[in-house]
Image (tube, rainbow, N blue to C red; front, side, top):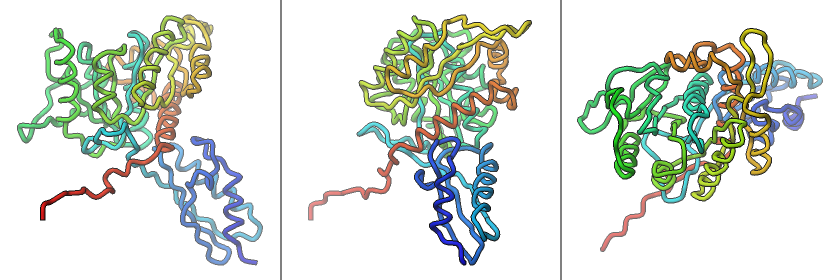
Amino acid sequence: MAITEQQVQAALKELTDPNTGKDYVTGKEARNIKIDGDNVSLDILLGYPAKTQVEPIRRQVIARLKTIPGIGSVTANVTIKIVSHAVQRGVKLIPGVKNIIAVASGKGGVGKSTTAVNLALALAAEGASVGMLDADIYGPSQPTMLGIAGRPESRDGKSLEPMEGHGIQAMSIGFLIDVETPMVWRGPMVTQALEQLLNETKWRDIDYLVVDLPPGTGDIQLTLAQRVPVTGAIIVTTPQDIALMDARKGLKMFEKVNIPILGIVENMSLHICSKCGHEEHIFGAGGGERMSKDYGIELLGALPLDIRIREQTDSGKPTVVTDPDGRVAEIYRQIARRVAVKIAEKQQDHSAAFPKIVVQNT
């Protein structure tokens, strides 16, 4: 008896994609099922970067299909395709950029920039083309964190070529000014600088542009909401009550301006003593979890308070690059995959598919 497509579909329905939590049929990831006698071939199309997961997913699918009675050879081809997703109404996409992820916090000192850079590097480690925009005009830290020195070039005299570090494209006001120079600017100048950095950089075919925002809910955040095509935002907090109060304000601001919140990252959730291994919740416990329950928003991950995260980032070689096989890098990669899955589940952007309507007098 020949193998039927129903048998293959039924087997695939019993498997769960470890990143989406859905089976491969419901998640519309199983494609092009071909049956030739007893032999089966199919494609698994992932809408998020998951380079480290491709082989385990392929093996998982083959192993399950091999249990179908009478089946011959099984070929599974796992590929990744990242597309542009919908943004705020009336805001145009930026050439060369498919999706923009804003990383925000209500207050400073919660490790937002460290989270942003490691998230960007984790997305790149999973196979995505990634850019980093340092939107903190007053306190740009990404040049240091990415270990990039020098000034950006302008080949056409109008736009800037992005700088590169650890395989990701980057732009920051920090590349254009002296390290010691304070930015004594009023709000309108700051927002204009952000728009120029974003729109006048020649981003090259980026799947995800991570924007490291300054803390708070001021001019830059409003400009971002009104004029920048943001796919979704991530809120970074610590378990401390004061940080959570401010994180809630940041969350509500994005809700007001109709930018979807992709999730919350809790930083410094647990301290592990480097001498004795004793674990302690220095900043309190469970704050991010409570906030995620209160607002129905996913807690993407919790990171420990670890001196190495700080040392590695300060030296220009963040954790995901320095210790790619370590526990902390794996947490960052899990967060990156969840963020990418949440974006993949959003409505696609079809603005480029619509014809331009031109009204002419005839």
